[in-house]
Length: 196
Image (cartoon, rainbow, N blue to C red; front, side, top):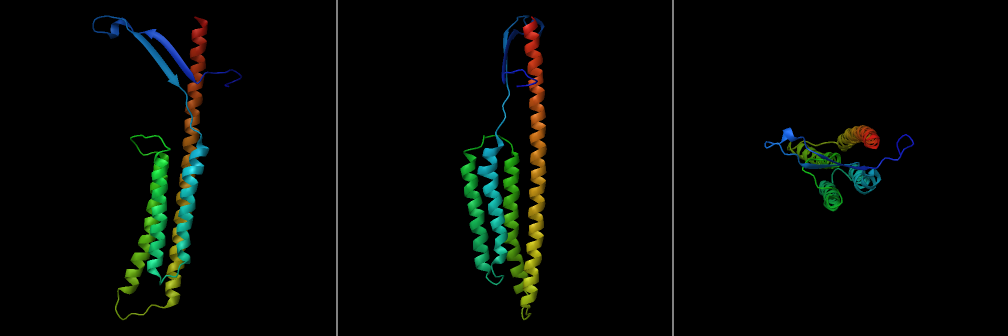
């Protein structure tokens, strides 16, 4: 419904090509079909974005594991990363196959990078702490490093989710405006045909 009128989401128009477009001056039959399609975002939000969102929250819980248990922490990170990849393999079958990265692909890619960065932080800090021979690090310093890392990663997590949310709202509004423009054009086209 647009302005109190029903507009078909599909328009089909038959006409002929102008003779001057052909090398031999022949007029050919032409059929133009336009479709107005809008995906329902709820399916993607609840089946792709929310599970990934929860897994990245779970990744942040790794900071509750004692810093000294590096193996346990890394195993936790790898488990979350594998769960994310398994989810990606399942969602590939649900999403349309296109030759470019979609908004969802970029979001998942950013989430993978986030998880890998947290796992890398555990490894790098462990190497730096264990690197100097004979140097003893206080437990309080380890706790401070861990807390600082947690708040830095929490800030990054909040920031990238805010950015993707803002981008998602912008893209949705832009696509809605395009669709409404197409519907207005379809109304005008139907009116022109009705007047003939």
